Length: 147
Image (cartoon, rainbow, N blue to C red):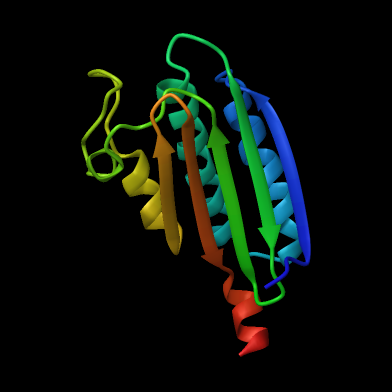
């Protein structure tokens, strides 16, 4: 299905840009008239994915984070967050709650949080090439108007 609208943005993996990512994605999705809970869910999932890029993908360096968001007539929202960082050796292991490579200060709940707020979370990664997290959600108001 072809998206009815799409946006792309890229920015450096500075921690200050985590809030920017939340804001830009939520502003873009706002045209779909999401509920407050839906927009909050999306912002939280985007925040977790971007934080993973900042903390894990580019550990002690800066790199680019790329976000593509697509909106569909049926109320579907797809957000892809991509980095060109260190990659994830074992995606299945990384998705396990409480698993982290970020040290004691990290909870290891990023993917679990994303999964709890989105309808679908797809993670692909290649070591030394980067990681792509695709978040999908169907908005209730649009779902109701197209059923």
